Amino acid sequence: MDEFVATSSSRLTNEIGLHARPSVKLTKLAKSFSSKIEVAASPDGPWVDAKSIVKVMAFKAGKGDTLHFRASGPDAEQALTALRELVDEAFHEETGGIIAPPERAPHG
Image (cartoon, rainbow, N blue to C red; front, side, top):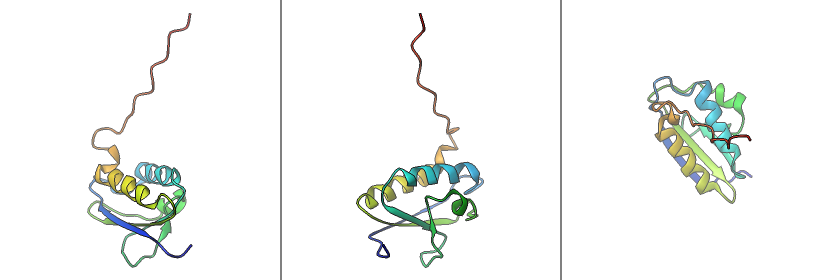
């Protein structure tokens, strides 16, 4: 699958850039789509698999760098929209990025 049908880019605005926690969020989101998704620091590459935590963590992008995405597959456009929104929202780190667990019904 060498032909990529969708491309997108977004600038990193979170203070530390693409460190461990944002890398995990990015790869988890990428894995939720069936399309092949790659990320690069330049529109010309080199491109790495956005679903590989090892490759994404080795990427070393800092605040102000632009992440370029490309995808191919049935949900390529939706994947890139979701990834761009994640980066645009600073990986939800500026607001703490904490999602409360669902409340449990009392036992008894």
